[in-house]
Length: 581
Image 1 (cartoon, rainbow, N blue to C red):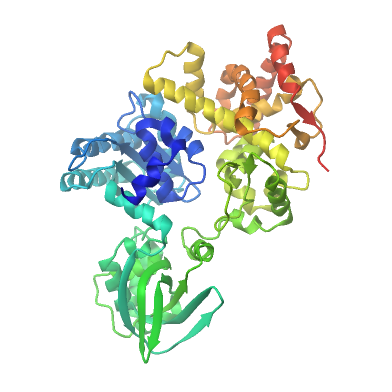
Image 2: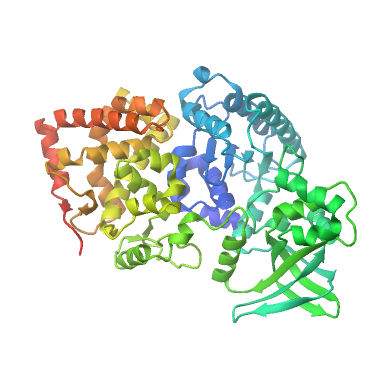
């Protein structure tokens, strides 16, 4: 059994997604997603009338989008059906070109979000995936070539001013999944030995790594890129963005410098950083075993794609690093990777608040929290990991800022003013669990409704309306804000400081969700009052506030009903409002 398939089959958390499990696993592998369950509720569109889109994933922070079609079989076959790959042409037409009014509800919100992200220049690469668990085939490749052509034309016609530079149609079959899986286990996929002529350099080392800094011929780098166009960047998730002036001015500039000022290229370029298995310097030769470029994809790709001859005297600054410590390797990749440039939350991982929160969570038997620290952290499997990014967005929504949670999540970590609203000396683990569990209750309720719709289970009108509402991108954050604003009515207490809200004892996520569920089911019945804010994309803060005020007025009316009074009292009996010392 292959490595990826063994790993995939062990993922019990993906079982509820049925045929879409492999789609989500592939997405997680490729883009290193921490909270795939939450992404699933936002990205999955599979079902009747999905217009051949099983998944639409939009990541504004990393500027990528994926539209995917999946196929999974337990039978042994030579290849996946090519007609399923061809179906992506239909997906392209509906997602990028069709009038909004004609879009089916199942994909409407996702298509609108993707189009808005393209219009706002927040997408640099869009991929169309055909995900399956069978060998790759030429027939599928030919169909995907047509999909790529269709997508490029649709993008040019409908988004002529977009900065989206990369359009790819990819067969994500057994081979690709195995390569992606290997890349998560080892940073280096090119394992050959190379001998490079050098003119000098110097060593640097610590007890955990060794490095050699030198200059390498640009021609050698270009040849390397042509031989290993993808595996060479196994530890660098950023694409080569192209070098035509319409693609990337910087990369076009790199090629122009090689042609016009080859002797100055070294001083104009930042060079590359690469991981290697081993290196030796013998006389004027550098001998390396294995290579993965973690920084310098654009430089290397530009050199490899130039049609002009590269002069022999064109040199590139280069660092080669040998390291066997997995946690150090992850950090080398993280801090050098030009797509994974230092994430905003990484700057916060060592501040006092995050350190204290990690300490508080360490004594919690049900939850763990890494405090924005990624890589090299061993977590107990029996604990539920609360991802820093997810919980920061949930807290922002809970504190009445759904627009910040949905549209400006990166600013929570980048800007002190936003960060200190979410994480301060008042923030404690118990309160984070209280907020996060509300958010997850809504997420899981949406997942339940999506499953009912897909399997054809009988849904009442309220459930159908709730699913229609929750399919709107950002609706989960808006509903979180609205329920938070209604808690004073639900608890029948004046809430002067919502930082102090928490459950009265330690409990699992499942127990927390059981307490929140009656509250969510009651409150979502007032969803129509939130539609005006959703209609404006949740970008208008005043419109958001007005919608939430309308929502709470409905809660106020029903909070006097005897049946709901008892339900609210049960919830309130498990909630405390007091400062944690």
